[in-house]
Amino acid sequence: MKLSHPNISKCAYGAAPPKTIALAALPLMMMVLTIWPCFSLTTTMPPPDNLIVSAVPPIPQSIADHADRYIHFRQAFLTDWHPLRREILINTRFADTSQVHRVSFPGGDRQQLTFYQDRVAGGSFQPTQGKYFVFAKDRGGDEFFQKYRFDPLTKEAHLLTDGKSRNTGGAWSNKGDLLAYNSSRRNGKDNDVYVVAPQKPETDKCLVQLTGEGWDVCDWSPDDRTILLSETISANESYLWLLSRASGKIVPLTPRNAKEISSYREAVFSRDGRGVYATTDSASEFRVLTYIDLQSGQQKALSGKIKWDVE
Image (cartoon, rainbow, N blue to C red; front, side, top):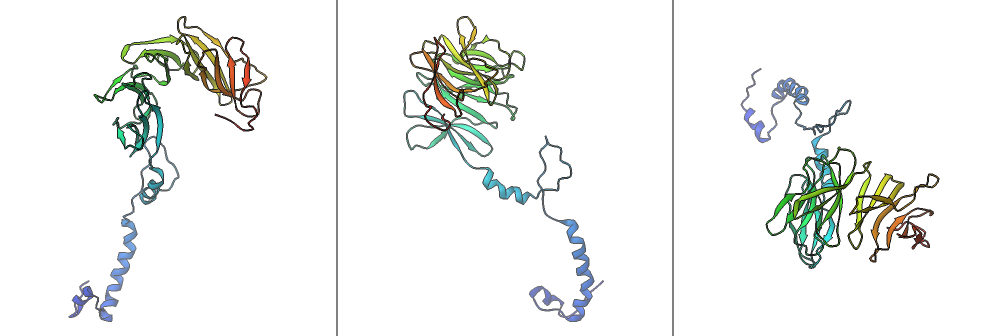
């Protein structure tokens, strides 16, 4: 179809075309409106590679972009205090991953210390001098965490674990030369206790083999001879154990009672080494602060008058 008219060029400048031209162009306009939906410019968000999506309509990318402002926000978590200076380590998320940052004085700016594509967890100073700290990192979100020693002066990180197993938790000895943690290195399932001198990664060794995945290192006794362990069966059931560093033997600190299941959390040694403080719901409707005497095994509730959970 060919259209010609002396005033056709005026259409581009807002002039109304003659009726004959408008009527002649009507079929072409209808054809364009009919074809236009087939060439939609709306983009959709592709599903993650690890998901199989069925019978789910495409999600416009504009919705995902709008939600980003509520999903991607900055948080800062205190992970440790420097033992000698007014300095702290925090975990802060920028972009997609959380990294270790240092704040060197009150009110100071955060200084990013680790730069990885993968998230970094924790950050614990060597507890006597603070010349280095230990952090954990997995790869691609696989949760097979590895432990590293980080030197703030050289900005170098040194691998402390085997690079393959899942390594979690950790507590420093009071002397500050050893770190005890849990690892699935032996068989990929059970969470054994390992001890390493972070400045000498070759000293890494298994202290005791355990059965189960719910084991965690809680604390060292003041004389560094005993390590306090927790064994978690479920959210409502857990127990405390004492591990001898010299012999590698463990003995139960809290009783197993099939009639009354309870849990113990946040357990630490008392400063004199004669007892353990923990929170528990044993014999109480609420979680209370309890002192456990190591010699007698007797438990004394310290916050029983508070009618809510404590931590």
